Image (cartoon, rainbow, N blue to C red; front, side, top):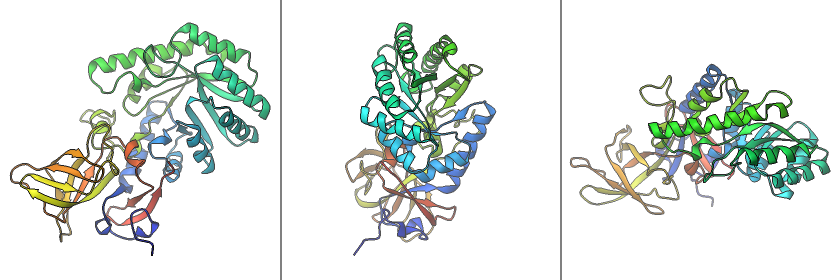
Length: 388
């Protein structure tokens, strides 16, 4: 017998309050709001959006993002590119170096076949050589963005001399075409404090200057690609007018109740519009052994914890039909248990169901093969499948 669990599509039509816990839920209305809000923001700021698909690895959500105006989807690995290609994504930016010969050969073959727009990053002459070999054999031309990094940072060229060496390698490679520059400002800072914002701005000014340096090498509109989910407003400001600005924010699609609730340009009292948290995880109180303490059947296998622990939002008391807000704190996670601390005067009973907000969508999505998509009435309308 096949059990009915949140990982089987048979949950469609059921109330989320009837599903066995733990399970993850996507709020369809919040998703649609976020898609529209980000699309409008990008139009207003003259930027394209190629959202990072690694956030969800959900083809159904890729196509909703494309339908909302995204000009492509961003990948982090060749395996992710393969998933996107298999599910009909017409344009992919690999925000990484493509240096595995076999994977480079496969991508070159897809590009040569037509109907697939692709670009990846380069930061070394060796990387250019690998792409040239693969593209020449396939009869393709591979579009690349020169990655700009910082000393002590992540990938990317460190100096102008490094960038000039990569440019020279591209100049010797007839099957590799330079289209612009790229980088990741999120490796510079992890919050929106004034020192962090200044550091991000300085990095982006370096990125723009690098683009200006190689503008004559590019046939067509220079691409400037940056913008994770925390600083895309600074990206749009610094890079505006420098060329074709392509943002890569991925977490906007579900937003969250933690890291991006605190740090997104589209949240907080001064935001021009506010994103909504669309992803939550539900659990059940399995034990309440002492005052001020309860345990849920949600753990590290179910919810992200790398950028903060889950945030209790609401409780559905056992036997009730309506939720109420919950004042509580998750203080630790085991593999399948959440430690919940309760203030004086607040209690949870065994069998109560608790809705948890999450911090960092990327590392919650990758824990689920299927997520329930729920309408405003809490009824599951569909199941969103992931391909991690």
